[in-house]
Amino acid sequence: MSQADAPQPAEAIDRFVARYETRQMDWDVFSFQEQADPSYRRAQMRYVGGGGTEKHNDPNTLPPGHFTLSIMVLPPGHGGPAHFHETEEVFFVLEGEVTCVWEQNGRTYERTLKQYDAILNPPGVPHFFRNDGDREARFNIMVGAPRPQPPVYTDPKIDALRADRRAQETSAAPPS
Image 1 (cartoon, rainbow, N blue to C red):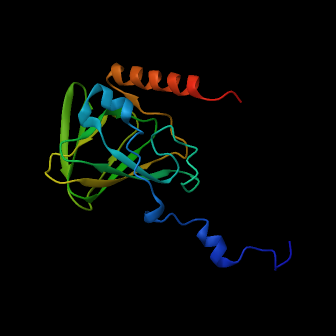
Image 2 (cartoon, helix red, strand yellow):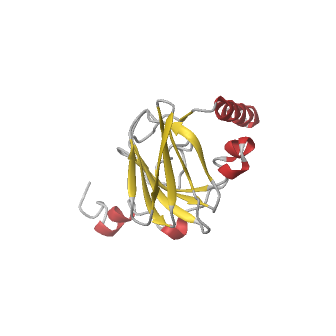
């Protein structure tokens, strides 16, 4: 490749930029969880990879190398179901407050994180989050793998709903 054909510095760096205005709030990614409990309604804005979801082929994200990065939008009174990952997961609060709860040995431990607070959820530790405040919360989620396995939910009903959704999506997909 000649120097004239080599990517220019601006083109090279632009391939690695994900702008807020091009992100989409995906309110559907967790819709199967809402079937179990309407308070699980929330949105994900993906930046690097698919996060802890199965949306690994989102063409609007930067390709992951070692981790995923997204922002969760959490309305007041909403949260996510208890789950764990095979890898670590970090929550970093950008706006509002997020209550994070760990479940271990039949006990729960909770901490409320405020703006710019973070929690590292170790692999295998069931945890969940909720917005106990009166305004929307936004927090960054980083999962420590480029294509993490789907989370394991402690409520088998959630996994069954996810399996039903997958089956519907597979049967609706055009043959390849």
